Image (tube, rainbow, N blue to C red; front, side, top):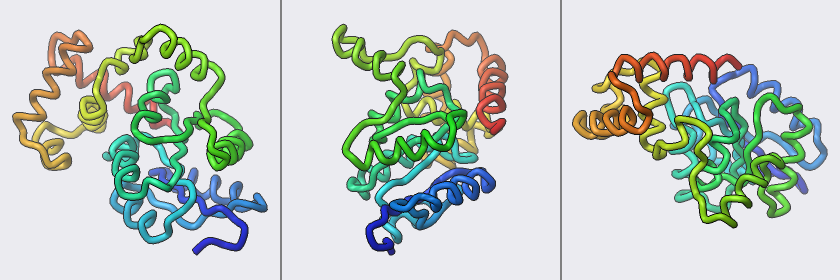
Amino acid sequence: MKKESKHAIFIVDDHPLLRRGLAQFINEETELFVCGEAGDIKDALQGIGERRPDIAILDISLGQGSGLRLMEDLRNLHPAILILVLSMHDESVYAERCLKAGAKGYIMKTEPPEKVISAMRAILNGEIYVSEKIQKNILNKLTSNQFEVQNSPLACLSNRELEVFQLIGFGLKTQQISAKLNLSVKTIETYIDHIKRKMNFRSYHELLMYAIRQAMSENMV
């Protein structure tokens, strides 16, 4: 479905207005065009599988789904497709995590649209795109043999624990999380215990309140 001499872009975000605005901006570029869009993981996997874009732009939070899990699925199903994360999540916490999950770039939604175009051109040229600050952090860790970002409570969580944490913030109960992730209730309870221990919460209520505040702050855009 690619237009001649153009690179196809697929947008995955649960905000329709953002998808529409970003698509209009991308389609103004001579070498880029938007071949499709989706608002959740199911539609994203189907659409990307059908259209096989050069780049998939996606957020980490997709309503009640995890962009991290989508990245891992895309890496396994369509390894040739480049992934650029466009998110409101704190770059210092999530950028390296996304790179490990298969993304080739990470950019904050607070950046001007021109930066998104620059990021796409960079990863099309085989580069990794993150801010200068994150580049320095990664280089520092490589030279000092450190592999975890420790400036946020969320940095200590595994990808699956983070996914459970996000779903808690969206208001899902343990049984609902279990059904959504196709895991047993006991397994979800174990993840919750790990989250409480790692983040020093004394009760589930403390965890719940923090997760809700985090979800609200990261979904204001």
